[in-house]
Length: 568
Ligand code: CA
Image (tube, rainbow, N blue to C red):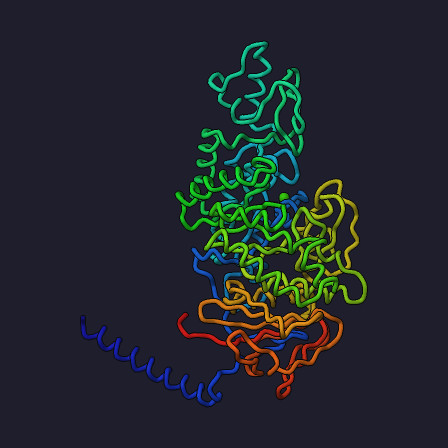
């Protein structure tokens, strides 16, 4: 060790001691338990503690689902593209944890980006290319690079249940059958014959190969022939496809329609997903997978046995889901904590590494803001977002939901161009899918809502910030504090790595007063005023404690930091 280095070490240690002394003094001065600093944000109060930037291999993220077609158009043809997504990355996360001018999401799910005949691109013609309407492979690589700078993980949609009927595999198999005459078909003569499910004669859910008496399985449409995922050759193809994208730097895949791999056969689908999960993680142990199994909760819980990290928590989503029913007062608030805790316990039965994937709406559902009508609609939209975004796991936000975009009925209406400004001719604006109806929007554009700290946009942003500040929110195990809850108030506790938070949600239109001492935490302690770290208001004023009484205004939530162990 040379002399300069020793001196440097001495000064560093001295500085450390001095700083520790100062911190200790500040701690004593603050009377033992340190109070969090709260900052006003419109009608809400948020903690000013730093947001935590996830390590690259941290699978816990807050995801933002992007339909590239409708997000941002960079070249003026009206269709969104990858360069458009790059232009808007600073809107999503600018990579600087100090700023609050971005949403703060830490993951992106790109709906299919591979060449396809349809506007939605769920019928893939080439699994290792970019649809020209969206840009080039270089654009995609640049997008990954820009996301990496911002600590955003990107996952892409992988449609493995079926290909496009224009995929060369399928085209070749059909050509073979057309030229076969009366001969016996065989996978040895044409390997692609065994890539799909062909059958001589009509079966339900099958479509005809034109000019032959051959039919193929295609339960969605004739343009989407189902793949035979039991064929080792097909599995080899997907191994190559996954390796291709993982080597480019994608963080993982969103798996489309996993319950249709073998329709209505959970066991078979779990077997296929087990192979897929092992294969992908053999290539990249840190890869993240989330599956779409649009069935009931006890059934999709079983899918966790495959090792796939996440499955979308459908029972909470959509216009018949629990979030909507709780936020609109159809279900009693006290049920929320029970629903969440029970879901976590259910998934844990099948996997000790499950990461729940709560979401509120997606590209197949009516836009969530449209579920609410009447004078409390906007407050209920915000409280629904709160119920959704304080759930543990990887929360998924559908683009445009953070500004309360509307669109229902036909699928095209659910996938309209993102409303960056009110000027529909503004640069970047996407025309949206052809065939969409004219949908009248009620809530402001991004530009308008950014200027209003009480907007839906700001509410989402504050919720995401909360997720990024307190790991117990996104990673915690939930306990329902039933005794403190009632028909209008939900009280839960969440614990992770030595941190425990308690959240109170007032889902009603009346203010509520609560004796802090009456909220008995799971450790037997009671809530204390000085523990309050965030109070988000979807209505008129933020929660506030006066003496031993906590006022939780109508449509608001209060977050308490109950305990925290250093260094955890
Ligand atoms: Ca374009």
